[in-house]
Length: 218
Ligand code: BG6
Ligand code: MG
Image 1: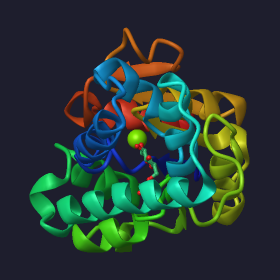
Image 2: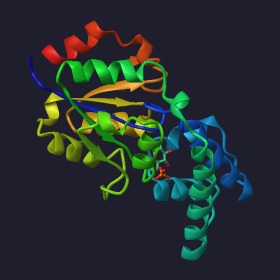
Image 3: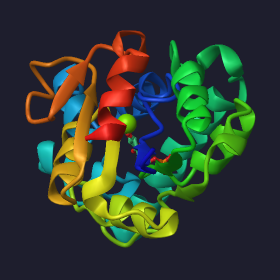
């Protein structure tokens, strides 16, 4: 059987942390007098912390000093860290362990490709770190999704060609990054939002072992 590279985004794919990013950004935006709904949030999914704050400020037509910028980034992350400090394995999204175990049983290579600088700590907290042959996170990249850099580095570390990689993503920016890397993109979430992915599923419970087999033998 062929060995392919399976690259997972973290927030909103492996764990239910997208809601915590949302709450922390909403608080910050509202404090600045800027509207922040699910619509704005969708545009921040998969996007780095710096780029997210830049976007929020531009939506509100605000300019601030570098010092204020750093303070706001820190405040957002502190709020987020509060949320994730209470996390446990219950926040692993449905059927993620089954898919990881199935891939391992089929001797496939598995990587994390996340924009988050908190990724390693979260994987440890939910006890999933040992599943990954490679981890690429926000500390390892210079270009944020939709740039494909994070996934290209992951493929290199797995020693698999980009065309032989499959990416699981819940964000518009992440699906774009996977497509730009020439990888098979699988959207996890709403097909109305992730229609540019090669395949879309609401969650991993809809991903059968037969479908996984078909990805490997392709
Ligand atoms: C992505 C999230 O995975 O990581 C974004 O989808 C988040 O919402 C980004 O802003 C950066 O995360 P962190 O933990 O480094 O602030
Ligand atoms: Mg995500």
